[in-house]
Length: 468
Image (cartoon, rainbow, N blue to C red; front, side, top):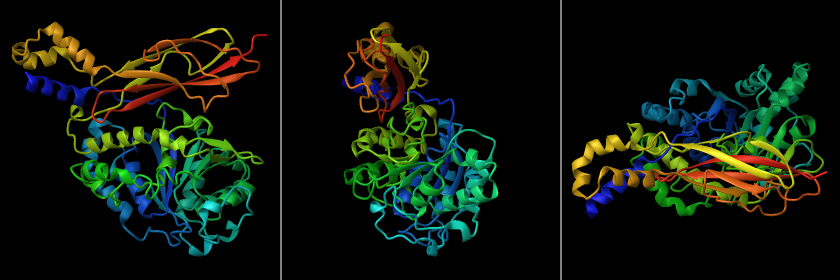
């Protein structure tokens, strides 16, 4: 009897999950200087290319890697490994781009070491410092020309330029747009959202001053959360779930623990339901940011906590994708629940009004009672279970676990909201009394019972108006 129950629960654990759908995807340009933590981040990044609209991967330099690494074959080796697991990845999401598509997105940007004119103390390069570069006389590169091309397109969506190393390639692109395309310049650069892992060359301060329409996010607290040594406790995870028995791409992970100082840059742009990309102050897997005084579009990250609270979710999600690399059938790996809010994601109410929020939660991995019973009716009957009782077990163990909570840091309302039945699909609360418009951010987490347990999110932003 114990063995039967164990096998039953083991099967349930692996099958009770769902797949997340997103209505749109972020347009992404990733710039990498190719150092060790970039190569770790790139393994993760390639496994998320189904969830973004990849425009380019641009190989650059930085103050730490002044000559860059495009002469090395590291990126092509990773894509060759991706090619080997691609047939399995497509089973779990047909949106994965082909290896040849990925190869077509690789460009070389600025790797001229004479353009690195700042010191090696990138953590001390802060907004407002005097620019130390002038790209006017620099040669165009395939990377800078690609940025120009993408930003000139007749597509109003933002372009997330992830600066894993130096940003000089983008600085040259913005200069070219300003001088050669003056009629399109403002429209083009205002679409650019640059997430900077420190200012690792002179680009950040130059762009602040001469291209203020570009949105700049400056991350300092990737250090101490995602970078070298910050997750030394993940040795077993990397050994068992990344490097071994998870396919050739994971094998190329160069560190023996999670060491991905650049991953927050692309985690910020994922459309994972948290909507953090809509406003840097809202917070999500890539941290939370505040606007720097004196600048139109410059933001700095708030603290380590705005990263740490999401790391476990992100690493479980990473593990599931590594499982996809070797799972030849959809049902052999876990997938996230699907969450959809009924109604609008942004609400405006008045103090004292009843607020009702409801979500639809589905699970394409949900267990089929009739199919399972047909396969093992005799076994379950011997265990003393009739079909009705068996169905109750299936429902219990395949059920997703929702929880609503107030993300107080992201809202302007200073009090706490009393939520009725926070672990239900539908919640209610009374809009609090306010003297001026205030915002409340409600987060819905939906966790499955799979292995690894995965969580999907939805965010509803409620603006509360005072009663006139």
